[in-house]
Length: 313
Image: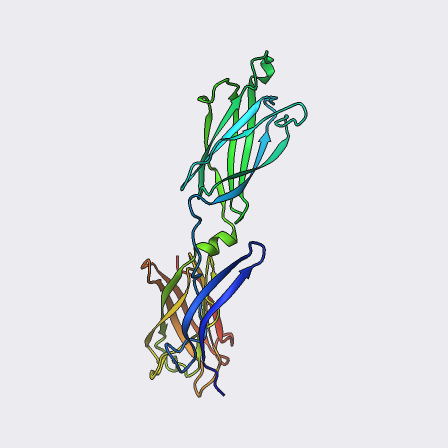
């Protein structure tokens, strides 16, 4: 009887981290109240970026190539966009050998939060003043992979380098990150609410307009809007040759991939000839055009009342 709903907020608890995230709404989900939207996306109200002093754990996986192993120590320093780590020293010993030819060694390292890791310094350090065989004067580091354990972001370094053994820390090699894989959790943490302008152009042929209820779903690299009804108060929409404008608020979608346009076949004249759909991210001003030029009609064309539209090249 009373379908309208005024939502205050939604709390989501991450049990693995024992943290609760609040998504503030403070508006109506109703066809008759407010902006008449019944679907909403919320940004996280307490989605705080890591404090620069907060510690996190990194997993470091080092692959030794066939060009040279070492019995000596190895040290690393990670360079992030926000911070530089302290030195991480791997002390090699006869009891716990690391860095053998063709092997992979895994370590965990606690550090201040570094932000996106851009590069790392790697040094090959002699353990003590002793005779070192010539074959151990270089260490072949093939790859290094660093995973930020909290969010799962992965940073790949394709080193493939012979690092000479030195007795002082002032000698080292610097490697730039080769590839980064951002986890879904990390992407979600950084998303913000964005308003998208949707412009629908109806064709000019006789009978091109529709009396049906129309819906749109916008798909992007970061997800989709869900099915949204295209409506405006006190307006007769989607008339022949008309251009209708709507605004949808959702989390940042990233690069737009597809638009699904559909109607429910209601009304006296439900068939609809759609010329195109244009979607603009109002935050960036980037507009994407999705050509159509086809009927959404049970009695014309292929009989479909929905279309998947793709960006024009």
